[in-house]
Length: 308
Image 1: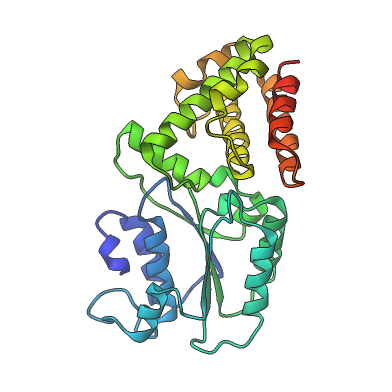
Image 2 (image 1 turned 135 degrees about the vertical axis):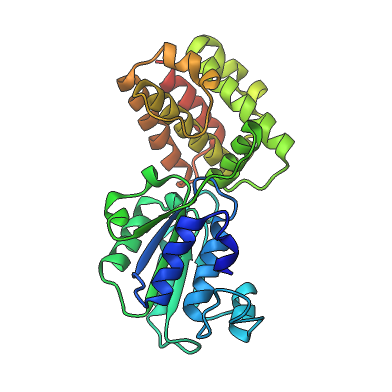
C-alpha cells in the first residue's frame, strides 16, 4: 500500500497519493530510485491504486481484492511489467507491449506498464518507448524506474513526471553490490560477484599499466569468469561504467558506482578525450557480440585496440 511508505518516502508518496485523490494522473511517471530497495514495490503499489476501483492506498479501503491479488501474481491483463532481457531492454519487448495494449481492455478502464531499470533500454527500445510517450493514449499510464537518471534520454525525461526517492542507508560494500545488481541485473552470489568485479578492475588497470603483458595475462585474470556471450557483455558494460566514472571524476561530478581508489590509476594516466575514445572502443566492440563474434577474439581485439 502506498500509505505504508509515508514515513520513509513522504515526498514521493504524497505526490502519488495526491494525484490519485485529485484524479490528476499524468500519462507517464519516472521513479528515480536512488538505489532504494523499495522502488519497484512503490511502483507496484501505485499501479494497484490506479487499477483498483477501491483505490489501493491503505488497508481500510482494500484488503486482498481479486484485482490486487492478480497484480501480485502478475496475472492481471491490464498491467505489464518489462525488465531487462539479459543486459538490456530490447525493442521487441516494447513492440509486444504496444501490440497487447492496442487491444480492447477487459479487466479495467485503465492500463499500466512498468519498465524496471529503464536506463537499460537500448537505443532502439528507447526510441520505441519515446514514440509511445509522445502519442499518449487515454487510460494508459507508464511508470519507469531508474537508478541512473543521467542515462535516460532527455526526450523521455521531458515527458515524465519525475518522482525522486530517498536513498537507503546501507554500508559502502552493500551499496556497491546493490548497484552492481541493479545496473547489470546480476543475481549471483555476493562473494562471487565481488571477486569477479575485483578481477575486472585488475584487468582494466593492467591494460593501462602493462600493455605488452595484457594479452598473455587475459585468460589468467578473467578467463575463469568470461566463458560465454552474456558474461562478455557484462565485462564490456562494466568497463564502460568504469571509464564513465573516471570521466565523472575528471569533470568533478559524483561517482556513480566506483570509489576513488578504484579509478585512481586510470585517471592519473588519461584525460577526458582519451577516456571518451576508450568508451567508444568498448561500445563498438560490444556491438559485435550481438553478431555472434567469437568472444576470445573480441577480448584480444579489445586489449590490442585499447593498448595502442
